[in-house]
Amino acid sequence: MPFATSNVQRSLFGNLNVTRGDWTGSSGDAPGEISVSGGRVYLAEFSIQDTDSPTAKVSTSVSVSGFVATVSAYYHEAVTTGRFLIIHA
Image 1 (cartoon, rainbow, N blue to C red):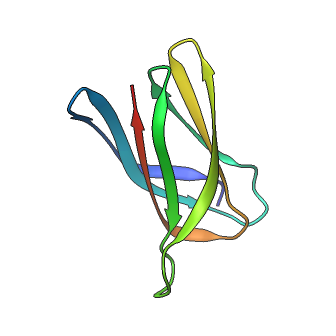
Image 2: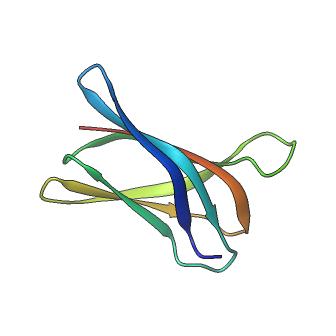
């Protein structure tokens, strides 16, 4: 199963935008990407919650083109229960 998002919700946190939801991915896939509005990302957190062990964090990067920011998530294993939170403006 390639990278996919679901249950994506967008809301306001003061004067900042919040995008959050679930994600899944397969081992060996290209990095997952999600685009959000605005030219700034203040926080981008992707976590893996597949096991009872502590939540694993995933490395991310951000690229901006105009007023759209694309967040890339770099994972190296199959993920069935992933969560993400992005705070942006």
